Amino acid sequence: MSFDLMKSDLVVAVFGAGTMGRGIAQVCAQAGIETLLYDARAGAVDEAIGAVGQGLDGQVAKGRMTADAKAALMNKLKPMAVLEDAKRAGLIIEAIVEDLSVKRDLFSKLEAIVAPDAILATNTSSLSVTEIAAGCSRPERVGGLHFFNPPPVMKLVEVIAGLRSDPSLTDALVALTKRIAKSPIVATDTPGFVVNHAGRAYGPEALRIVAQGIASPREVDELMKEAAGFRMGPFELLDLIGGDVTHAVMESMYGRYYEEPMYQPSAQMATRVAAGLHGRKSGVGFYDYKNADAPSPP
Ligand code: NAI
Image 1: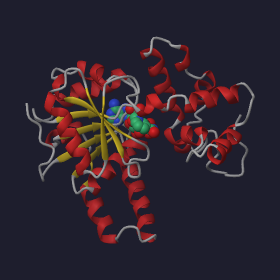
Image 2: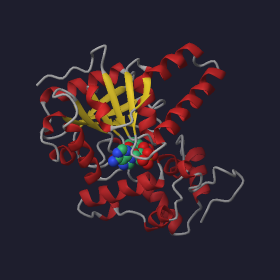
Image 3: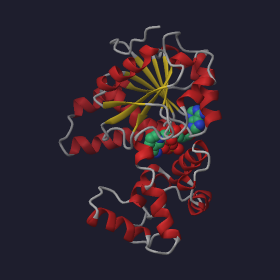
């Protein structure tokens, strides 16, 4: 099997127009690749493309991008109304909900639509690429492309092959990652890959500190930034990632490490997710983004 993601007429189809999907689509369009964006929720794609445009207006206003470059990027970014529109895509990147059965269901539908040499890539943070691929009739063309938040800013992308991926898939995904001006690292298909495994303790341990009444989220964030030199505090990061996504990742990692206590999800986070306190995307998380002076919700 040979995959070619370097063709000049490559089309990328991104599924999920939320926090990650819109950013991934922006990055691909910025590299001059025709990029289609799909979301199951009506109106989500228009909102996402509108938000990308607004963000770029800010870049133009600051002189970091020309108006022509913005127009060229927006011209490459197109809404996809129905799944069948993905038939022209040589690369699928899914950034939908962190749920194995939902991701498998999407890929099995897409398999019937896309060309035989198209690659199906997942942006999962914590699920097994191999398990997602196992739901497909041709697991050899499924791999992981794990971007970091926010995709237009973060250079790193983890490239992951599943156990049954074709040997040429990793090289094709690494080449694509460089084509879109990112820095790839090849990771093995283990829970959390490299970055989410190495950084696992940052959020959960901070949640334990708050649950034990040792310090408030704001105090922990200030200490970690000012004293420990981290760019973002753990609660700022949890709000950026999204509480719903973080909780799903914690549950998945805990299950995949056979309930090892250090990976135990946070009961406090589960309650916050139930309350819709998802962070930046819902307007309130550990901080209130609608009213910066409001105290952190308990
Ligand atoms: P999000 O909740 O912001 O966006 C997900 C989008 O997918 C929503 O717009 C939703 O309507 C849509 N969706 C759900 N099911 C769908 C389906 N069956 N077909 C099409 N669209 C569907 O989530 P976010 O944060 O963008 O995460 C997406 C994926 O990226 C997850 O797998 C997550 O683990 C991963 N990820 C998230 C990061 C983060 O910082 N938020 C970082 C790296 C990876």
